Structures are given as structure tokens and as C-alpha cells.
Image (cartoon, rainbow, N blue to C red):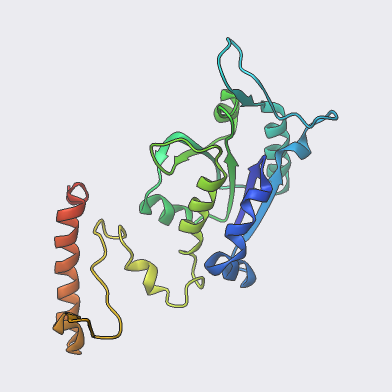
Length: 224
């Protein structure tokens, strides 16, 4: 999989991809992540990428020309399955979206900034708009990192145990059951006996029951 991220702050994007699972995925050659500084696609001494909005109002808007140049150059080099715009008014990211995107080959992610992008960018290029929640960040970079983490960990070979991702919270519209590790007794708090029994069919049934109970208490909306 190849992911191209367009941003005005490429330095903000480096750290999440240089540690843990995302780093290992890159080192294994399972994903390529490329950062494109929008200022490299501007002309003039000041590398301007934003301007005042027509009609007045507070806040600056990312201009269409540098974004057009960057996306057009990338699309001339290869075919892309999606051009994703990270924006607070997009569709809220969920596990289903992450699962779907993990099947793609080439994806462009455009990070918004300031008051967003010229609407013509959304009309001309964007195929999908994604939000990570009903709140506003300073830019789309952190949201893009969240999206990439959610997608990349699903790629075959990224996790040491590929079944781990299949049992995550939300994969089956249920919250994950409680988990325990050693010691089995800590300050009088004991691990449920069923988990120590070695009876795996009963353990799986217990986990299913716990997942359903936890979901009904914490997220009953998922059961609808």
C-alpha cells in the first residue's frame, strides 16, 4: 500500500511513523508513506499557500492552485483509489471505514489547515471526506496520522498475530471483552476462573457474553 500525505506541516507528521507498528510496517515494505509539503508547489518568494476568503470573514483558506499542482502531479505518476480530505465535517471514522481503506493500493490524504481548503478542491479532486470526531483541530495532520494508524495495522503481515486485529473492539459491532495477564491474583483481585480452565470453547463463550454485556452498558447504540 502507498499513502501520499499532502500537508503544510510535514515535520509534524514524521514522529508517528517512526515508532512502533507503523515503523515496522514501513521497514517490512508493507506500506510506503510519502509526505508532500504544499509549499513546494507554490511560486513566489513567500511560498504562500493560503489567502483571505471571498466575501470576508475570519480565517485563511488553503488556495486551490498548489493543491491542484500537487494532486495532479501524483495522479500523473500512478492511479489512486482515493483522495481523502481530513475535515471536521466529513464522515466520522469508524472500524468499517478503516477495514475498507486497508484494501486499497494507493491513497492520497489531504490535510486541511486554517479554515480549510477552497471548496473547488473538494469538488474537483476529493473522493472521500473523513473526520475523527466532532471537534476542530489546528490542522488535519494529527487526524491523518490517526487514520493511517487505524488502516496500516490491518494490512496483512503488520501485526505479529494477524488474528489480533480481527478481535478488536468494533470489528463485530461489539466492544472487546475484559483481558487479564499475570499474576492471576493481585492484592486479592483474581482473574476469572474460566480463563484459567483451559476449556477454550467455554472461554470463547464467556468472552462473547462479556463483550455483549460490556457493549450493552457502555455503547448500547452499537447493538441497534
